[in-house]
Length: 315
Image (tube, rainbow, N blue to C red; front, side, top):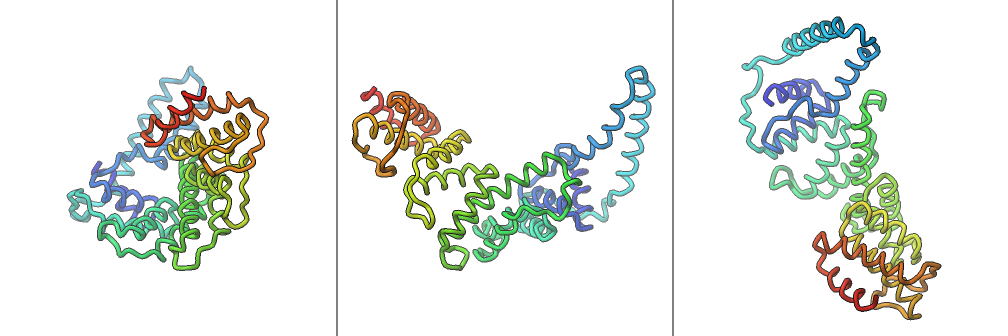
């Protein structure tokens, strides 16, 4: 782990944003990192071994010798680039959030999307005194992370890294929507911008953004949004399938309201949905409602058990 840290530390001093992120992670967790576990290391390893797979099975022996030689050369090159013990500051790897923030900020300024998200969260919370609590700066870095534009071109980044950055940007868009909706950025609340940010986040995989969109379409009242049960069900289903407990419960409520509407001609106690059109059988809708209430109950939602009891009496 020390060896991995030394590699990251030296690269970080030279301005490598991804390495600076990993140094920050070392300080945040209070431990070193396994170099081989990083996505970047994996992609480099794949690139090195990719050409060797083209050789035929009849040349296994020579290929093995070649691999050993290559491994020896790589090890030699890596060792020659490591700083000496005297050059490396003597960190004891205790958790140090001030150091973590400092390195995350360097990485964020260098264009690392995950670091931008981390810095935004730390400015929002103050990170237990590691940095000043500053909502404007938190909003600024949240915007940068939501853009999802690392400086390094995509062709230089592995598929795993690109997928992770896409998800980080999606979650940043969810947070950005909260900033816009509440006005915590220091600007006046802007529901249209909040909705736009949540749409971007939802389309890129943020289950929280999906849930917020579903709630908007359930209730309406947000600028540019009218109650739309079909769209509400669509986004709540996506969020529920993504494992979000609140979405599972809300979807159970939505389906229960739909069942009550078509089965008895009356609205349920939930006021979320009005005038729900439906071509489904009411019993199948009730079964789906119970399914999602059970999912929510399994995750500890306090209101799900009550609804399950009611559904049991109805069915």
